[in-house]
Image 1 (spheres, rainbow, N blue to C red):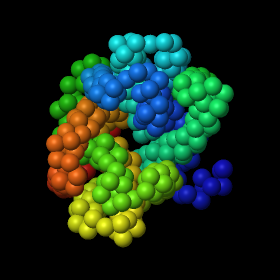
Image 2 (image 1 turned 135 degrees about the vertical axis):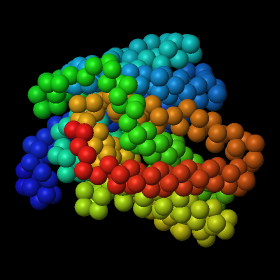
Image 3 (image 1 turned 135 degrees about the horizontal axis):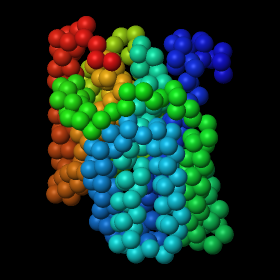
Length: 422
């Protein structure tokens, strides 16, 4: 392991904290297994808990809305209290919520559970992850640090997914799909609690805490920083794509005539692309500059989406669609890691990293609330290719806004060149 770390050209601080970042990344992937596994077992989840599609959608909105509200103050909590404690308590509470899910719950109680998960997995947990990675990485290695973090999250997710399938199949073969669903919940609950315990036992707060503790007034100081708002909007544009990526596969299957197997294969390929693009993008950004690579990514994502819209609706276009989609997905993953590296490029003080991440998340993750509703409305109101054209056009516009924001960011950096807020 040490030889690999040395070959990657990491700074001394990143080398020393490499394992700690992997540990944070593992928790940052595992904690979202419970709130999101329903998407992978959509029909079975509906049947098991006697839900409608609308009720299923409300779970996502409740989770997202509660997260948006809690992020704002959660970042301050992440700076105020022990990072190790915030991460471990969040993981353990989320896992315990999974065990509650095993009980015969009504729709109303399930809503409360998803609201609770919005609190335990989003409130201070995510800002604490961002803070930990930023502080555990050298100033010149922020791209690498966040690239490794996101890449490791992708690897852990890729490992968990087939294990969850094995758990489901074990229960389904033993009795029925309902038991298979319970086995999945048990699997995710156990590994989430164990992850929380591991973080508590193995992480060292001394490397992540500042003697100069934040005050509540620092929240106002963060809100006055132009860099925070620009990073928030860039994150917003990127997260619109996060919420939209699910609609590319049905476009291929419903309009280009691709098979279900094609869609599943594409989904599997995504899992292997994520770590490569996350880590590769992080390392590249430290060489060419975070803002330069962000600009390239937004342009490629926008042009790639436009190219897909221009494809003739023929089955012969499936291969070209797949190539375009994978290129878009590669650069999307580059962006998702780099937005957090912007904090170092913009000289956001390290002592308020959690508070800043909370404010940025409040702005940046708003698409969680409305993008799926917008897509569903357009696809229902304008069936066929028309609905997709409207939605993908919206997506292209958002990428164009991302380009404009990065250009504004570059002017901001030039204007504040030489200033050091750390």
